[in-house]
Image (cartoon, rainbow, N blue to C red; front, side, top):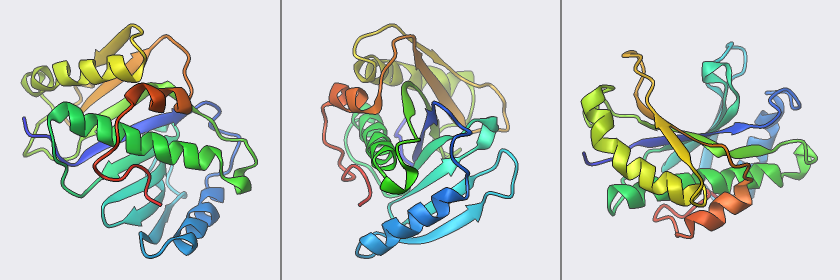
Length: 199
């Protein structure tokens, strides 16, 4: 399976501390602080358990996503990735964590936002590459497990698929070890070929 169009979601620790609409101003400030990297903000905050607030760039979207009734940062890779499947997974995880760290350090949020780095949802946003089937999951699982062990610092990991046929091929990675985003980034110890955080 040749992986592309990967999505990664890291979940917030305390989902109700910040109003979803507060992220609109934050993302607009990111647009103003960069030279054309970001170009739009899409507001879906009126939708229950929906896409939330989306920051749009050519190479990837970054959003505060509330699908599945769980708030988190969703990094959606759009530009082509190079390397092995494990390298691609590490790159997208690293880019997602970089953006999590940027939001955690965002002055406008006053330190109220923290992401739990011991749980992540990886999905393939291309049904032509991998349908949500047991066969596709089996083809992907080994690479995800290898990267998950690195991400979680060698702690025990669980890797599961949501078998709902209406959803993308996805892998839910969890570890019982508590971990923040800085430690998870150190564990990955790779440089993303997509440049880490979109800045």
